[in-house]
Length: 326
Image (cartoon, rainbow, N blue to C red; front, side):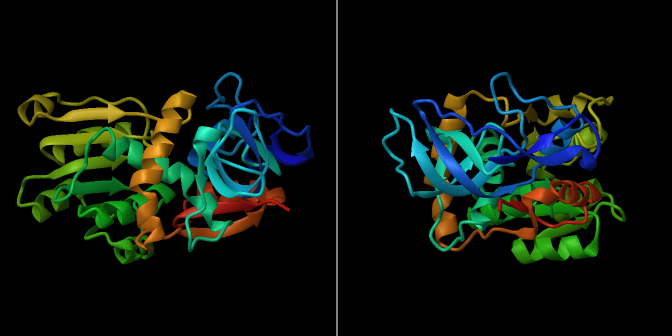
């Protein structure tokens, strides 16, 4: 099969489509012939040599895919050859075929194309496992999403709005803010021209929001703390603004705040299977009902993975960038 190989750590140009061996499935895995995969920030970090895959996982990038099952392991009962699926994968999505643990496979939601279904697994699992499973975001609360126009952001806006949460977002252009508003965000803040802490306080009568989903990290930590209501929860899923900072801890104690952080890739297969199961039970019905739609900015052929990475690193996109296998 063909797969995108990281020939050496570096810029997008190190991504090259090469002929490689087909993956061999274990008893609890399925083999998926990939139609599409989607880019994630983790892929760019892996390409630069800053985010190595866990031991035993595929060395090729790609953390999600959609396609058709070509083979099933001996102990797999739910899935069969020919099923159209999407999946959270342990690497290797940038390829024509990928081996996937059966517990990380999801049915393609009715009404969603097989290609567009590749846009869902990683964002759905990330958003549900963080602000819902761990931060217990619930109906009637308020949520601030940094990077509202990102793939995570565009999904989180739709899901939270569907579940009765008032959504605040930050983004860096009027075009991106308009896209967020169209998806259901109530308060849209241009972080380049506005102080998001002041705007959050203004919009909440001085209280702050209940939950924050943050991909910036260090440079936003103090301002995030200042933006939270009593019993507020901050969930950090990225460090685009650095990993070190100084903060004043007093606000944490005074307002009973919780700061959490987690990734998806390094979780155990059992934990990923639990998350996928919860996503199918709690999130998939909203997609089937048409309340959450895939937000796909652009599709590239698998052979143009380098160009797709350049687009992601420009941050000009809104939503997901897909790679389509030949």
